[in-house]
Each structure stands twice: as C-alpha cells, then as structure tokens.
Image (cartoon, rainbow, N blue to C red):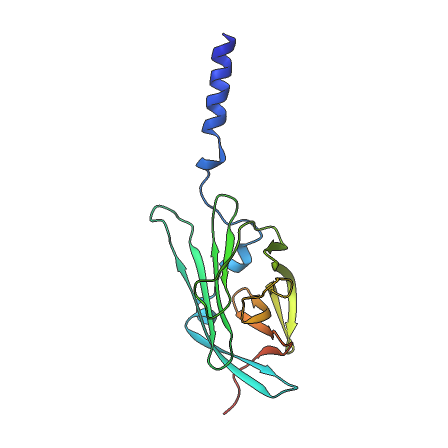
Length: 191
C-alpha cells in the first residue's frame, strides 16, 4: 500500500511540474508589453542635445508577433533606427514559463544580442543591465514605466550607445552616447 501511495505522489508531482505551465508575462513586464498603436505605429521621434546642437530623427515602430500558433501570448518587438547617428535598438519582450524575458540588439551588427531571461529588476547579463524606474523626466515631460539599459559596466560594450531609456507606450525617450553626449526626446521641431 505504501508503494502505491509513493507512486501516486510521484505521478502527481510530475503532472504538476513547471513544464506544463503555459508561457506568461510577469507583472514586472506588463507595462512594457502594452503599446498604444497610435503613438507606436510606424512613426518618427526626434532627439536633441542642447549644449552641442545635435538633432536626430529616429524611425521607430512596434508590433506584436505570435511565435507559436496555439499560444495566446504575444511577443512585442520594438525597432528604432536613427537616420544619421549610430543608434540602433531592437527590443523583444516575450512571454515564457518563467514570466517573460527581454532580448536586445543594440548595434548595427545583427548577429549580436543580449538575452535577459529573468524579469526581476535589475537584470544583469554579461555586464549589461536592464532596470526600471516608475517615472523619468525628459525635456520637461514626465514618462511612466521607463526601462533603463546600461552598457557601461560591460567589459567591451558592443552596443552603439552607453545607455538608453525606453518608456512604455512611447519608445525611446533618451540616449546617452559612449562619449557621454545625451540626446533627449523632443516634440516635432517646427520647420
């Protein structure tokens, strides 16, 4: 009788294992998953540095992709490419069985990416770090739920930039170059 009980207990544990859990987004990732189609469609943002008189135009867009047909969780994919400066960002926010994760490409080399697998902030991977702040003010505008990427602690930062700030529903709001120049998001300049 005892052996039957142990066998049933073992079967119950196997049946309830994590491998059967469907992919999901953790609470920490939720602000970065939802995108306002109006502000994040195929559009343009503008960055400016006041002290050096640098202006940059960045084409950016976001879309959802369902990687597995029977899965109801969608991956958010965000792209931003500057027209003149070396600013290239591809951010993928995906559900998984551990609550979701980020994959980041932050340079012109498409073969280099950083995988941040566990959604508890701050997330560190190979000297790179992702953190989140509740609010962040840029050029007089307050943004909520801002993801902060920092590549300054990596042995060899393969990204185009030292840091960037990504606001949920808005995209990139600030970029810091490797030589310390800060470019902040501004409204569309008048012509």
